[in-house]
Length: 320
Image (cartoon, rainbow, N blue to C red; front, side):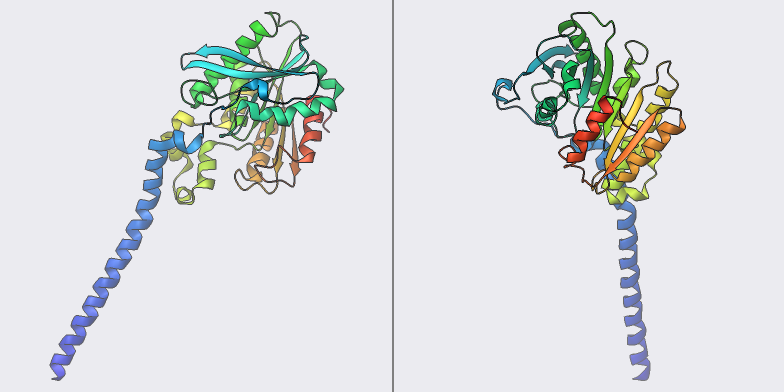
C-alpha cells in the first residue's frame, strides 16, 4: 500500500510538473508571439493604422468665416489622382507670405478654417498672409490613398498650383513656410526638405511633433516596446516619417529654415518628450529653433488659448 501511494504521489507530481511546464511554455510562447503579431499587423495594415480618412458632406461655401475672409478651393492633380486644398486669405490681394498647412491623421483641410480664420481679426499683421490647407490623398475630395510619398507629391503639386493661381506665377519676394500638427509636422518637414533645392522654405511651425513614426508606434502599441526601433522602421518604410533624419538634411541645405515648436505637457498620444527631443536635435544640427510647453493634451492643443498667442508670435518672428 505504501508503494502504491508513493507511485500515485509521483504520478501526480509528474502531471502537475508537466502542466506547470506546459503553462510556462504557453506564457513564453505568447510573450514571444505577441510582439511578432503586432509587427506583422503594422507591416500589413500600416496605412489603416496611421491614417483615418474622412470625406466632405457639405460644400465649402457653407462654411461661415469672419467678415473679409476668403476661402477658396484649389484643385490640382498628381499621379495619385485629382487633389484639393483650401486657400485662406484676407481679400484677394497677392499675399507676401504663404504657409502650406498639414493636419493630423484624421483632420481635413477645412478643419483648419475654424482654427486659423478667427485669428485674422486680432492680428493685422496677418493681412498679407495666406494659408494653404492641404488635404492628404484619400481625404476630403482628394483621390488616391495616403502615404509618405503620396503626401509629398500632393504638397509639391499644391505649391505649384498656388504659384500659378494665387501668385500668378510671380514668386519674387514671396516668403514660404509650413505649418503642421501631429503627423502633419512630418509632412511639413518633408515638404521643406523636398523644396530645399527649388523654392525653399524659410520657416516651419510645428505643433505636437514626434521624432519618428517608429518611435511613436512603440509608444502607442505596448507590445512593440520589445521590438527594435530599426526593425519597426524597416517594416513600416512606406511611412517612415523620420523627422530627426529629415531635419539633418535641412541643416545641410543652403537655406536653413527657422523652426518653432509647441507641445502639450499632457499629451497622451505624442509624448511631450518627443517634441523636446526634436527641438534639441534641431538645435544640435545648427537650425534656429524655439520650443514652448503648454498645459494641454494632444487633441485640444490647437484650441488652447496659449496656442493662438504662440502662433502669432511664431509667424511674426517675435518668439524669445
